[in-house]
Amino acid sequence: MASAASTNLNAVRETMDVLLEISRLLNTGLDMESLSICVRLCEQGINPEALSAVIKELRKASETLKASENSTN
Image (cartoon, rainbow, N blue to C red):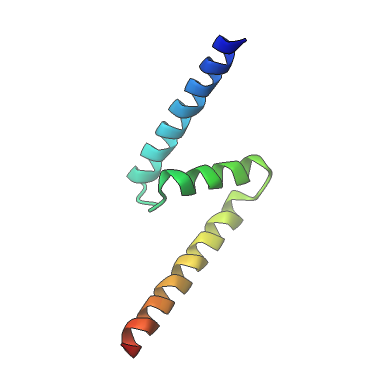
């Protein structure tokens, strides 16, 4: 039982490592934690295209906020 759990854990780690490498090659800007959250959301049925749109919108909002803060300083 312990070896099966260990094998499964190793497979999950390897999968996440491969996904992170793909993410880096595609210049997504996602770190391991963000990528893990996205994967979990997709596994729970969230539409990947909708998730991508939300991430893009959050990045735009963040950039706008940073620009606004920089212009007031």
